Amino acid sequence: MSKLVRNEDAFTGLEAAIVLIAFIVVAAVFSYVVLGAGFFTTQKSQEVVHTGVAQTSSTLEISGPVIAQASSATALGQVSFYLQIAAGGSPVDMKKVTYTVATENHVVTFVDEDSDDAGTFTPVTREFVGTEVNVDNLLEKHEMVMITIPLTGEFADANRIQPNDRFNVDIKPDIGAALGMTKTAPAALITDHNYELY
Image 1 (cartoon, helix red, strand yellow):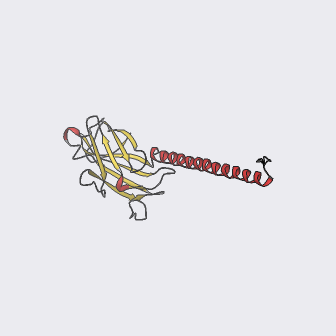
Image 2 (cartoon, rainbow, N blue to C red):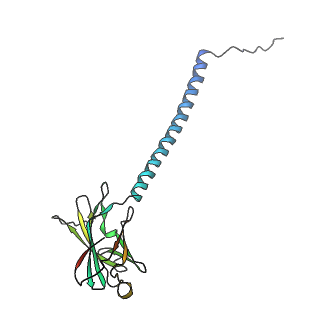
């Protein structure tokens, strides 16, 4: 009667090479997946940082003094100032900028004269300054625009800005942080005279 003999010889060189290659392939695939996930996470983190900086930094800045014109001896009639792009800022569509004027007792929102909301909110007037005609309504580098906010109508009667009244003006572009300023009306006013606000 013959016995079954099991061959328990060690791996041959070829079998060992196949197993080694299998381990290397599995390790390579695993490292590719880990590195890919790391690169994806890094890219998303970078996008979040760039978006956060764009949202929190103001793209507009005031250029020059803020001027108010008196409509009477007891009230301001309008406020004017120049805007330009802040250093490193991107172009701003002036049709989408909103302006909020707030006093101690009253808050009014204004929009651009060419805005789609001009029928709902009081419009401000806008005039680009320079030799070139700006047809795209974008405020870009090396450009300035003069904004005039009317303080009549909504600011009539008890809501008007009188001498020595403090008020805030917030300028909010569609992208980026609002640019705010706090000003005080002059102590005395003469009708149709202009005053620099501090």
